[in-house]
Structure formats: C-alpha cells, structure tokens
Length: 183
Length: 449
Picture 1 (cartoon, chains in turn purple, orange):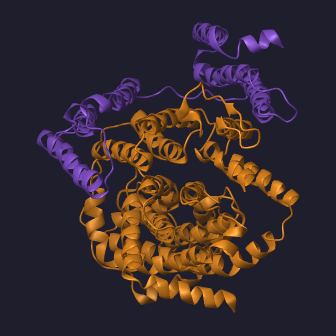
Picture 2 (cartoon, rainbow over the protein chains, first blue to last red):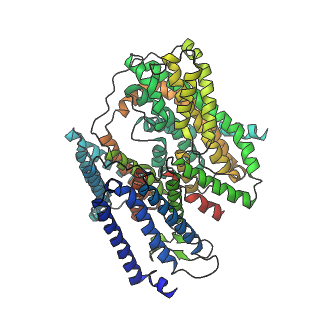
Picture 3 (cartoon, helix red, strand yellow):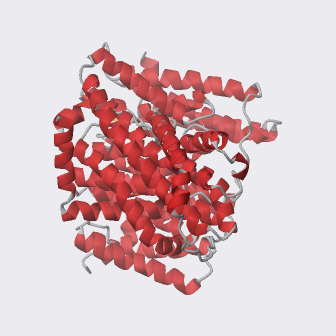
C-alpha cells in the first residue's frame, strides 16, 4: 500500500497526473493518425474519464484507512466509472457507436470559450463593470452583430443596469479591480 | 377536507400584491424565455434561481414555477410564427402552427396554442393537486430501505433521461456522484479531493453547477452551430379562433391534457415526448386526419395541451417523492436545496404552506398566462425577434453574475464556467442531458437527512 500512497500527494501525484496526461496526448495523436480518426472525440471522452478516475483513485490512497471510511464510496463510483467507460470504449471499437460530427464553428467556439475564461480572469484586475463592458462588446463583434453603434449601447446598458440593480440595490460586492475606492 | 382547507389558504395567500406581482413577472419571463429559441424552460428557470436566493422560499418557488409554466406556452410563439420551436416541447406545434401562419392565420395558431396551453396546464395542475397529496402521504410511511430504493430509482430514471446510450448516462450520473464526494465527508469528517484548498471544503456549490450545466453549456452548444442568421417575424393578424372552433377541438384538448399529464408523471419522459405522442394520437383519432400537417387547429392544440399539462404531471414525482420528472424539475430541486428545503414527502408535513402555495400558483399561473398571452403576444413577438448574437452574451453575463451574487465568490464563477464546458462536452458526446450530471445533489441530501 505504501507505493500507492506515494501517488496520493506531492510529487507522486504530480508524476501520476503528468503520466496520465502524456498517455492521453499520445492516444489522441495515435487515434488521429489511424482509421478511427472520426471517432477521436468519442474515444477521448471515456479515456479522459478513465484518467480522471485514476487520479481520483490515487487520492483515495491518502485517506484515513478504516472500515467504511472516507475512501469507500468514492472508490465505488470510480470502479463503476472505470468499468462502464471500458464498456463504452468497447462499443466504439466494435462499431456500435456513431461518430459525432465535427464541430461546425471550431474557431468561433474556441474564441468564445477563451473570451469567457479571459473575462473571468480579468474581473479581479479590471473590475466587474469594465470587464463586462469589454466582454459584451467583444462577443457581439465575434458573433458579427451588424449594428455597431448598438453594441456599445447594449454593453453600456448592461453595465448601468448591473451597477444599479446588483451593486446599489442588492448590495452585491462586485469586484472593482483598480476602480476600488472610486465607487 | 384538510386538502381543501390548505388549498383555500394558499389561494388567499396568492391575493397578496407581492405574490401576484411575482407571479405576473414569472409568467412574463417564462413566456419570453420559452419563446426565445436559445433558452429552454430549464435554462430560463436556472438563470433566475440565484436571484430568488434573497426572496422568501415560498415566493421564490412560486416565481420559478410560474416561469416553468409560462415557458411551456412561450415555446409555441416562435414555433407558430417562424417554424422554430422556442422549446423542444413545442417542436410538434410547428407541424400545424407554421402552415397556419403561411395561410395568413397566425392569430388563430397562436390563439389555439394559448388556449390549449392554459386548459392543458390547468388540467395538469388539478391532477397535481389531487394526486400528489395521497402519494406523499403513502411515501411518508416509507422505511429507510424504501427510501434507499427510491433514491436508486431516482438515479436510474435520471440516467434514463439522457436517452440514447444508457451506459453513457449512467457514467454521467456516476461522475456527478463522484464530484459530490469532493469536500467534507459527512460521516468520517475527513476532507476528500480538496487539494488542500479551503474553497473546496464544502465541495462545489449547487448554483455554479446549475448555471454551468443549464445556461453556459447551452451557449456553447448554440455557438457551435452558429449560422449568424437573425430571426425575422412578420406582422401577425389579430384574429383569434372563434368559440365554435374552440368547441370543435375541445375533445382533442381534453384527450391531450390527459396524455400529457400521464406522460409527465413518468420521470424522464417530459413535455417533448408528451406533445409528440398527443399529436400522433390526435391525428389518429381525428375526423379529418388529412388536415394534419397542413394547418389543423387540432394539431396545434394537441401538442400545446400536452406539453403544458405535463408540467403538473412532472411536478407530482418531484413534490411527492423528490424525483425530478424533467430537466426543469431537476433545476427546481436546486432551487429547493438553495432555500434549505428537500422536495419529497416530508415537505408536505414540514412546509405545507410552500407545497400548497405551489399547487395554487400552478393553477393560477395558467390564468395569468392566458391573460398575458391575449394582451401581450404582439409585444412578445417584438421582444423575441432579438438576435441570438445579443442573447448569448446576456445568458453568459447573467449566469456569471447570478453565480457570483449568491456567495460573492469568484471561485464559484470559475466553477460555473468549468461546469459549462464539462456539460457541453458530455452533452456533445451523448453522455447527458445535463440533468444526469446534476442529479448528484440528490443522494447527498438523502444522506444528510
């Protein structure tokens, strides 16, 4: 059990996570170059679930050892996910699964996702109001909204609305970033 | 007698101006949300859940139930006018609703949808009232073993909601359950999977998951298939259906209301299946089946009566047993938990005011939807013409500020985005209809109880 506990924290956990990610990446490249390429997503999702389950399983080796202890229930779920993900993989390789069509607007989707994450990250720095204004302007431009003047009006309208409705009326302490002390 | 006494008090309580205002606002928001093809009833309810946090639990749940009821009618507006169902449950309404618009009878189409929706919804509400109480009374006698069986049954039905590959749905449920184990173990007191972060000591909160799975993931899903085309709606004629026409379809409305309610009661079936089954039955039993698909009022009525009556039906397992009957019910469970309530038989014993308030509001909401629909359809049509390009950023900012506002936590805002991405991936690859993953809070509540 000692060797398994090694993977539950610190350097051991880091190595395990890196190893799992490397295997996933390798698998992705392998499937991408094989005749199973249309099934790349179908295959990667259960593989990611297996990888995630393994990392969670490693964590459980660091839990207190006792009968019906904190590790029992998570291990039950992990075991079932591992088995069922294996079954899903078998279904895919036996041709019982249809390939999920490619994402039609990959670029746009990635841009929206990155903008959303970026929006979340800049809120503590720039404050909620300015970041929301920029986020709405950016997203409306990305989605090719035609009425350019209206873009700024909509974004400004939201900022004004959220200031009065959430900040003033509901007393929600929205992050103000470098505007702290101004309001 | 106790039922009528409680119900009477609940109706009297609805006369309070605050409650009435909440109901009117809920119905309007529901109709608008349902009418916008980017927003399903579950998304509309989910977006409003965090804002109901500061409200009294009874008012909050009445608001959400009104949104739910209103959204089921709202879906028919775009289905009739532009052949695009606002909600999945209104898909069958397109078959005859849009041909009516093409014939210049959009007013009749919308009027039929409105009346059928409200009659069907009221029928479902009556069944809810008279069926739910005896069921909950029986459930109160359940032993712990029966409760365990009920929890397993609930999980199994939620897994079956995903449709398609059952194995994938079960994996989604298990993943949700595994996420639930993050944080403090209520039995041993040990911290699990927290990575030493105090933000994870209580595990993931319910609102970020709710917003991520039901709102953010929907935006990703829509952007993936983004065409950039705006909805355009022509002016509609204002001629509603006559009393004779309504009388002609009364049998169809009643039949579809019964079908919708029964299908709604079965967890996992929901309004979409109800409307398609009712449409098919109406076509088979009609005296003029050849008119179906060409603008038959019966077709519109069948679909709308069924999907609206399914609301009352779906609330039966939710309120009496704590099992969500549909995706929107799964969101409502989140709202119950947010207000420290556990849907199920104990709710009837411990919080009868809330239960009977919901009963009364479901019934009255149909009347409000009828009035609002009659006088406000033109305004709604203008409002739902708003471009998706505007709608999507708003869903995102509302979801994020809603998530943040509950605990003033940026961590929860980030979790919401994470759940959104996770929900989109799992849904894309056929693992879940979001509620499979979301069911994770149920067993947790069972254990704490």
